[in-house]
Image (cartoon, rainbow, N blue to C red; front, side, top):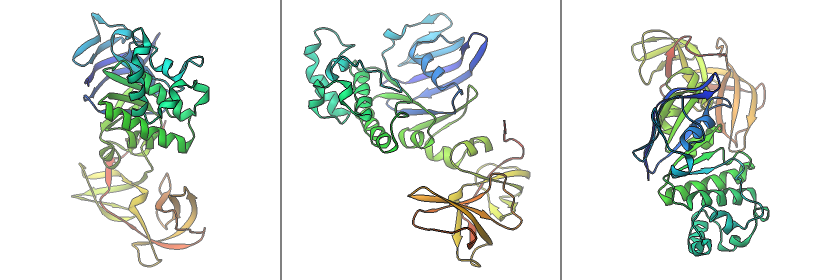
Length: 352
């Protein structure tokens, strides 16, 4: 297990700067997910850590050893890093066992017992050792790719969008299996993804990246409940933003006078409410009455779009309800806002 530390890392391609002086610490034995939209710098970050790209400035340490700095450069093959790509990148003409042992010392047949242990670790039966990659499902191929990355006992495992090519059901089961394998191996890992649910469910900490900078690094529950600004709030999950005015520990907005959690300042603010905080009740029993505009169904739950007289939410007013509750456009309901809300200085949300 090795801690990873990046300090003041800047990097880019040609004259274009991609990473802008970022800092990140990944504790030994933990999993950190780097979450951001395409083009935010996520894969560039992995290339810097793996040694595929030199930083313009800053330092990278793995296990207390500097591998990149002003006068230091350790090549990728000497960093002790395992890399799992989006497509797995298995050798199609080799067996599963030969793929796993490819980077191990000769004679590779002496590593047979380790191959069997690794297959068990990633949740695959021993009989797949003799199969070729084209005889496996996509999820099985990704597990083999992880087993190959773990075979040399690396200090660190990097995962570059490893589940994005899998269908939804297979993505979930493969993600759980790989998370269990990494924790069982005691590995330090960094996952790059643009899937919010994946990042929140997979990692111990999530780093939100935007335009080559980290906007917030926190544990998943903290990140979701206490985003540092309105932009992070609207990027991570669904959020309702309303204009409001703070006074003491309350904020006045179109949905009433609501308690505030976290730091705030008196004056004009943006009020952030999660859709699960909007409770639907029989008409007349809530703080306000509303009309159902539409219901977006997801199976386990759904989002109900609402119209409330005098409430103009730029991104719409929505309530999250269990999937068994079916509402039709035009239905009348009552609404109540549950729990404290977060507030942010008005106008800090970037729209570009």
